[in-house]
Length: 113
Length: 111
Image (tube, rainbow over all chains, first blue to last red; front, side, top):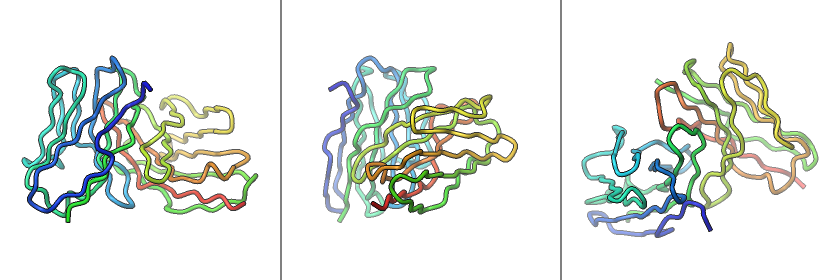
């Protein structure tokens, strides 16, 4: 399968715990994006990478959130000291730079109790 | 700022045509997209249109763009039960690299 994959698909955690999600983009796509989708809403942009460089961060990405893409392939999104308001679907997408089609993974659904 | 609006719900009978509408505010948008999301799943890119086009057709899908009114529509011909999903309109303004999404339209196809 050459699509975007995300792990885990579901995560339940208690408030105050740290969580980390992983995204594996389509092979050789040099751009990788993170979005957050809350119930009944469209996805909202969080951040994106071109290769290993994080080029843009949304104001939604508070200092409790950090994303990395150390080797320009997979990416991780960590949320520290989770809050109930962090409960959402976290979506990853990838594309080629300069190409407008972003391909999405299945998402990681986070529930913070 | 960017604002993309869609009606929340649409119901159609199987075999009829569905028309899902979207309005956007950023006149500098270069590309406009339609994505489909089935329950519990990620987003599937259906089609997109460049801002200098008025229409794009791809099998059962027809996209119409009215730049003057900043209105985008997606027509699905011969709607099937498998088309039941949430459809998102999205835009990429000039100079931006990310997508701005609408709230989505939940399409229900009645057998």
